[in-house]
Image (cartoon, rainbow, N blue to C red; front, side, top):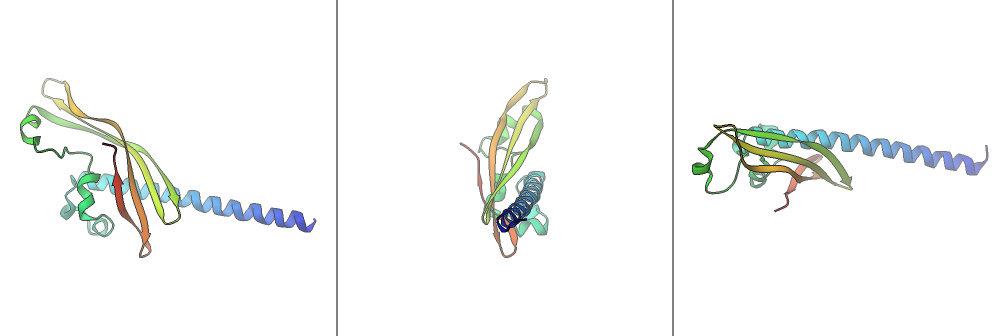
Amino acid sequence: MTKKKKILISVAVAFGVLLIFYCALCAYLTFKGREIVLTVAENFGVWEELPEDMKKIVPKELSTFINYREYHGDDIGEWQKEYYEDINQCGNFYTVVILDTAYVHYRYTHKWLSYDGELGPGSHNIPCTLILKFSDFQWKVADYHEPP
């Protein structure tokens, strides 16, 4: 085998190892991002009710925004009385990592079902991005983006 061929094989193997590492990191952060979003929604965005390990990675000011299960308007009380059940779906998670920043993309649906079986107001298939930063040897929520 020639020296040129050995170098080419070494580069291909190194690239393959890096690609496998990158895919594994993206898979892990997709799982972690999903866990963050679902845990915050399970606690209706109330930071004080999050488990202690989540409080270390989710800032208090972002927990309300990450919660997709609740409306954030001032008129919740009156119109919500007409509905008895909320329908929540969250999925299509995938992650892209660029250096020390991970972008966890996902979609959610949240609607209300009325007493007579009619679907009420809500959001359908809304794209969101949870931005994680690597600091202090762990991934922490740095920002959240949902289109207006």
